[in-house]
Length: 228
Image 1: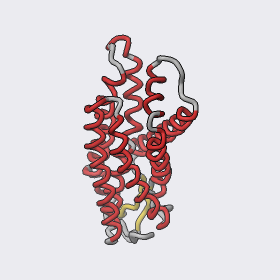
Image 2: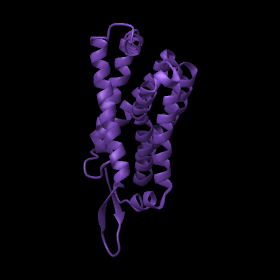
Image 3: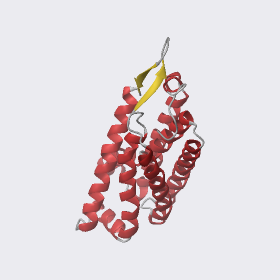
Image 4: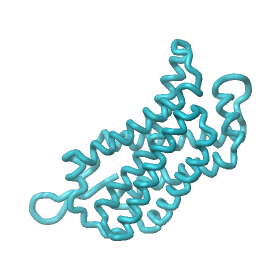
């Protein structure tokens, strides 16, 4: 995740994204990949018993093909994101694969929302943020086709930040699971709340940074051809 910003005098120098943004990005990537791998294992060997985890595994196992059609492209999308957001490694073939994968993730997310554990609260979060994700992704793709590199990167970062909100929901869910003995909340009651919190954190954090002085500086006068 590197970007180029102008410096005094002639030429440019490579300027990193802020540390907090990079740290959050990589933490979300690790969580997202771990969640996918865990779900793949759970589909092959679902948990047994009457625990909340076993109940969740049973829900996803009931539509295993759709789940795999969603989470495997999502993992590929997440693994390609560092290359797309990097000035050094954003090769054209990566971008040609990245945006269609994002479209598949978005479309299958709508289908997955039919089986929402958290009911309409979770479904409303998925519909809202998934629509925002697809809009950002489509906007980035269109700008890339027109050769507008700066705005392409800004909208791509928005899309990636939104999608990685699913990773941020996991520690939020962990808090709900850990406090369930006190709150007496079941997964069906707090999953939707966790989705709204997790996706909101990522979306707001990325947007505030893009609109900050630091965000404007990093993306200012980037001299990168759209297909580089």
